[in-house]
Amino acid sequence: MAKIHLTRCQHLSPFVDILNGLGAPTASLLGKFRLPTSLEGKANHYVPIFSAIEFAEFACRSQGIEDFGFHASRQLHFGHLSEKTRNLIGLSPTLLVALQQTCKWASLEDSNLSNWLERHDDHVRICSRLAGSKGLLHLEHSQWLQNIFPIYIVRQFAGPDWAPATIAFEARYTPSPACQSFWPRSRFLSGQKASWIDVPISLLALPNRANEDIPRLEDDEVAQSDFDIIETLKLMLPSYLDERAPVLAEIAEMAGLSTRSFQRKLSVAGLTYSDLLDTVRFENASKLLREKDSKIIEVAFASGYADPAHFTRAFRRIAGVTPRQFREQWRPQ
Image (cartoon, rainbow, N blue to C red):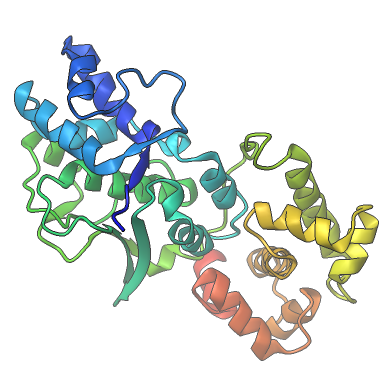
């Protein structure tokens, strides 16, 4: 059975805004491709993604807009991601975990979008591809958005001026001079097996630097109290790490919930209790590694690991580097 692949209206809005700014007949252009003629208040609604791409290409040609996808990408920012995606990134202890969460939940943005990480020498590629798009033309409009959001996610950890060394497109695409001027430190590749940007492996262990409040999801998805519980546990659990961390049933009892209800609250935030405990242990260990001269084995014990080898494996899974490598990267700073 054929599928209708969807994208959030939020991702169509920058194209519409550009057209409106030019005084183009935007409503009739949208209607031509059976898209809603008004997107006001519909940021989190969905429309057919391939119709949206056809609309972008037709509007590009009919209105004489060079490099439409690039200009649309400039109007987007991290806040245009779905609230659940932003919450998951906000709860990620390192850039590596944030990218893993981004890959896991890519379909929140586009229902046929797949994201994955590939390691190449001293960097990883954040790759993306739209299912069902093989052979379609003008995918660069969508692929600009597929690449720009990972860039904004990395900037949450690496700073607002970070830029990838390479921005690659699956489409046969040549960026305009304006685009190349805007991204002077990045090279562009086209005709790749997938769209991707590259990130140095040395950045994967960057801790979460976001200081703003985690954005809240809609009431019908998850209550604010769900995240209050998570933040409370992140404050409380470090006190127990050098002894015995409370088990799931004990935490649920402290919160006045059944074990099942507590698990459900974690689940809607994309977490398990084991995930949360691993995050707390990592944050405690990374703080000790950055601020103290304790031996690695002492950091392991203070973070709730009885086996230093287990500690190293768990730390590397989250940070992408060993505890010793992490300390070498961060102590000079």
